[in-house]
Length: 341
Image (cartoon, rainbow, N blue to C red; front, top):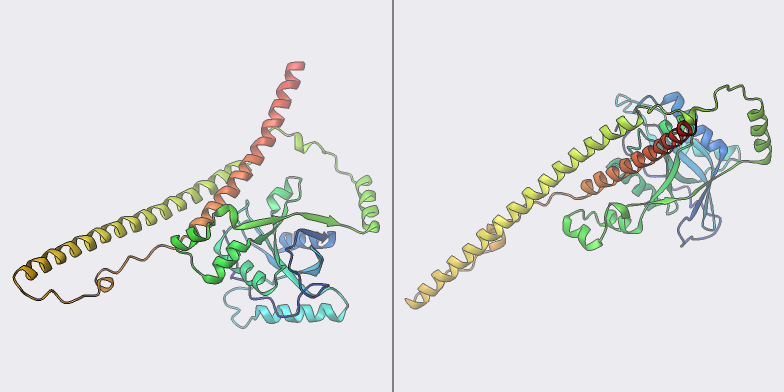
């Protein structure tokens, strides 16, 4: 998946909360319809295929509800733009919004996705940076491909407390993850989203729907299968291959560790036998040696990448399940109609 560099830390513009400190987590997200339109427009203008677009979310926190009232995009820039300072750009944008009396408090960021391919190390690191600086921060994932099929796909995620502790300690070894009892299903938590519009905008939408000149309103009943399922399965197979490579790495580490343990045990046995023989001959025992320096344990492969791959595989499976269930429903309905005729 094509992605930009890790987003910088959110500027210290103050906590986006109407009360002093907020101990309870965010349980609901309320998004203005204008924010959703801005995110969609950003992708339509700058996103192409697998190109990922990102931006900043602005708003405030009321009790356990996060209200997202505005956003602005990250500008597209190449590696040649070495002088571009992303953090300074965010500061200037929020300062300009504050001057025109618009909500300017940082509450997270958004990112587009390509066939649901968003579970990555870059997203994990960026969300950890945001959530570590501002506790209520969320990441919105916008799927333009699902949206183009007729249903808006916009989901909000946060890192779980377990994963936040792991990232703070930076202990991604198999023992560390086993001790924390964390799996791919405990990495991200989804927060329910409610889209809110003013009464005037709701009336305008009703009028626009009545004036709509779209002739074909039966696309959802089309029985032909698009390439969505084929592409999802291809991406799923790629991630399964990545998972198999990670398994090979871990199996190699396990074999090397077991082999070293056997060599260490044999060495200690030979040393003990030789000391016994020297003692029977009245000779002093062999001098003590540092076993840890002689048998350095092999480096354990980091397991965070494996968890991310497993999470992405689970996401692909959910997408395939959702797509196939809709198609199967339409096929059964068509079969019933044909039998009735």
